[in-house]
Amino acid sequence: MMPVSPVSNLCQESPEKQRRYWLDTMIQIVRPVLDSLANHSLKASMPLAAYPETAAFAPLEAFGRVSCGMAPWLELEGAGTEEDALREELLAVYHKALDAATNPDSPDRMVFCQIGDKRQALVDAAFLCHALVRAPSRILKRMDGRVKKNLVSSLMTVREIEPYNTNWVLFSAMVETGLYLLGDEHDFRRIESHVKKVLGWYAGDGVYGDGPEFRFDYYNSFVIHPMLLDITAVFSPEFSDIQPTVRARSSRYAAILERMISPEGAYPIVGRSINYRFGAFQLLSQAALQHFIPEEVSPAQVRCALTAVIQRVMDGADNFDSQGWLVPGVCGLQPELSEHYINTGSLYLCAAVFLALGLSPDDPFWLAPNEQWTSRKVFHGMPAKKDAALEE
Image (cartoon, rainbow, N blue to C red; front, side, top):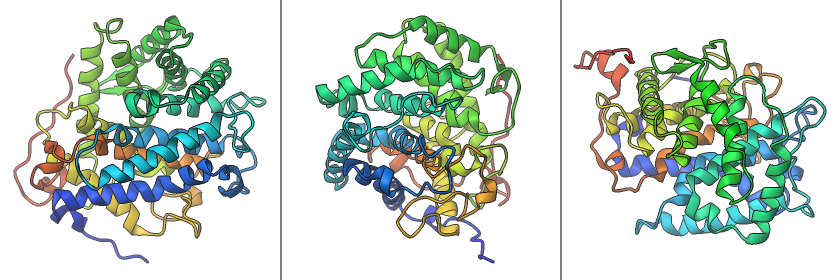
């Protein structure tokens, strides 16, 4: 049995070392996907033999999810650090990968259509579009005209997939948002309808139902809050009346996520898709990135809490196979935690935890002295602030 560390030792290290750890971990995760895709070998090299039912969609799953998570870091303007050269290198690799994913003549051309009753392409085309929202200068504006044309053609195909009456409606709305950003035909009425539908599923205290029913899982962080926030931001004039409400609810749910991180950097293993690992904390990282962390939570305690989670997962066991690909599980190989739709590509939504790398190294999130997070304060007898529900 593996020894369990009492707390992440990185949380006693400097903020600079913590950022370096985040960056190194993100690169370790995303590099096999981007490098192999840029070299037109993703389909050939990614382990898919164990997933015959979902293998066709797995490459787009991996690329869309990696894109969604690392986009803010790719977007960051040069900060005069050693990161700058690495960022420029990976930007070049990324654009080659995007070309390979959308070029009809590429061996890695991805599936952007429904196959039988399987609609997965809609999900990951939406994650890819979310990257356009998060990196408008470095991904969108730097996109070659030919690649843009191919991407638009791909999205025009995927938009025909009917979403399920769940969080999937936001995937449809995000694809339309991507088409808008690409300067092509889009259906704002579809976006507006889907956003209003999700708002109608609000259960209270910062939490939405996943469709008309409530489910105790992390989909409020995997999909619902992040996409609601960014779609309504893109169409700010049209959604100006609901943006304050959307943001307040997201801020509240971010506070809940921070309180769910244990003193040791663990978190509740509840709900489906738990194999997305620390992607469960996408919204908390986005709250740091977009500066809507609630007042009672400091940026430093969010940084330390997320650092503890990342290190707890990454240090607990080997999360990669011998070729560097993620394996199913939370801490190591735990295939019993997988649902039927999980494959190697699915696992890369874990990259969403790294959104806060899009903040400059001189942002208070990365500069403020270390601070214990809520549960660590409470269970070490330190003063902590009480919790309160969101009143609307």
